[in-house]
Image 1: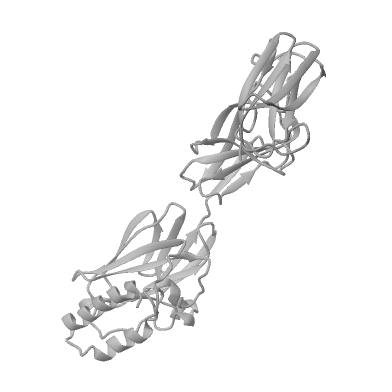
Image 2 (image 1 turned 180 degrees about the vertical axis):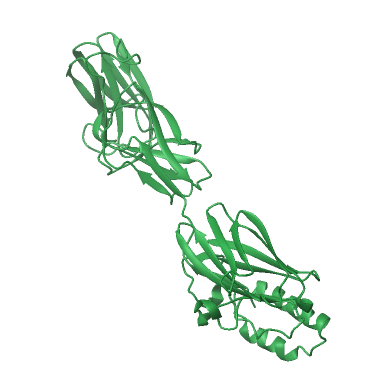
Length: 384
């Protein structure tokens, strides 16, 4: 039997005994027949709505979204159809579908989950029917997520009840003898990220400072910034950073005219990227403040890597540059370059293979870049 339904059944029976002394055998039988086998699955979005009368009796109704849900009774999600309403003077509250054209809800349920997920944007409508002991006052309490708002109105067009819902709130109804149903509209707004810069067409200079900018709604945790230099075919992680809307970056090579930026939330499901490609290039003409004045080699990127990594270097004058790869034992693996380079920035790519074209084993490797009397050595890791 569904565990949640068992608890609700016990409460329902206690109410009947306490208020009326009614023989509950037949009611109990109806409850048992309506139970499903197995535990219900949690919806992607589940929101509680608690209703309490003046006698202290209360019920918590649940509404929300699940990608597998229908508009009717979904037994596997804990939406079990209830028996007929109990006699008057017995507190009861449930979702029904009479006035919202949802006969699939039958006699009602304590849970009404609709088709969607936490990235859904749109409106869902629910109907709540209730009665209290001696028509006493009814209080509804809710605490909605930031991206969810709603409104409660009576079935008379909002004559007696017209209450907006946002965040944590409460509604008190005194005229329960007149108002025994509420229509609840729930508006969901999907979390989102929007890349602002670079967003296409910019030219960012290597060694210069730049600011990556974005906006977001309802995204609470860190985001990861990814960069592509091959027109979006592959993306490498650039930084994981708090969702502050900006990230300062000292632009690194290699250069490319086919760069795209992508920002992803911690779940990996909320994503946005540049609207068009932008460029990353070395400074031409006047040097930037951060451009090296001597022979310079940047750390390889990415690191660790598989299958390839890029080594960027800057030659202050035209000269011959030799680039070699060695394994952790100091054994030669590959010559990447041994030729004349013009002054300026350049990049070399190692595809993880040796001079014969065979793939190198995963592990630690070193690159050695030399030009005249200048030698630079860096460590890199080829992932298995």
